[in-house]
Length: 132
Picture 1: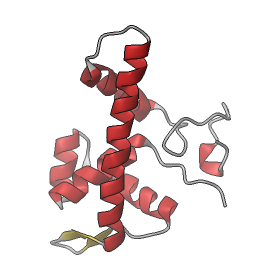
Picture 2: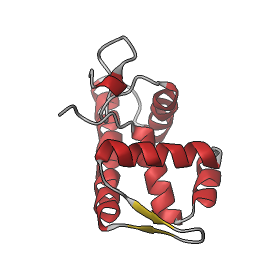
Picture 3: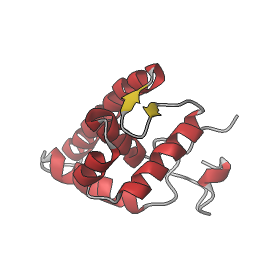
């Protein structure tokens, strides 16, 4: 089975919704429109094969899978931030991790070829077809 094509931004989007428990507020917090946020969460759930959130017309709550995934997503993002800091340190660059993390996140958000929690290596923009 091919690995899911999950991008770091999907983790950040999911965490915002799971913390706000409201798509509109999460979208505002992320400075994006609500429809793309909803689409990204649905794509994430499809990639994972589980529902992360319960939605009604008035309420959003986490499923058990969503609760577990949120905890692990926080760990992944924290690990990513540590990796950035260590790479900068090893490369002799300053340790302002937040500036580099923000720059890399912006680049990641604009990269449509990101694969499972990383980079698509196919070079053909076909990560969604399982090429990583």
